[in-house]
Image (cartoon, rainbow, N blue to C red):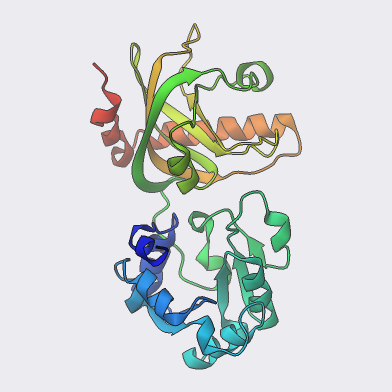
Length: 297
């Protein structure tokens, strides 16, 4: 039953982008996993271009001891014919981070568990998602797809009636957000890394507006649940609770972060709004204003 589901597994956000980038720049790449090699090869066969990218694939059944032992990474280095100290490991698990460091490699952790970054402190860097990887920090060719502080993403949609949130948008932050319920959208919300995004918002009786949006746990307020908090970049004279709101999300700005003070949080939110407003004037993003999903009869 488990193996029958592999064909349905989606790539993590940023994975296809990273793999394509490394392949285009002819960067040698290995895949070293505790899973049996046959399982690895079956899983990646459903993702175009992945198998060809990895010049070395090593499964847990091909070494004596799996992670957190460094053996699997040292074997990968040997097969790549590259010194361990010249290799970068990208890992999502705590044992994997330990294995990479024990092998004498630099390690970037992309935690597979939310709100657990404190478990990954032995990594050289902990990032929220692969969207946040900056290859040039590790001597690799930089991405060239950031545009005026934004990263174009495959557009996605979400909508529903505007609900009352935590009561802090207008009162505490001075930034009124049009909150959406995540009920019925839990899979969609879990698919997308926490962070700040932007796009277009359609209100059923008012029109279409520019919007910046946070997804996540809002570390400053320590939310218990992952939420979606859109900020429509327009001054409204009244609340519109219950009104149908539809969003098309077209770009990414930054990962979710904590802040030392309320003032610094508010300043960053306004900076995000300015970045979004400016970016949405670019033809690359403006075209999505005509997305049929936003148009409600």
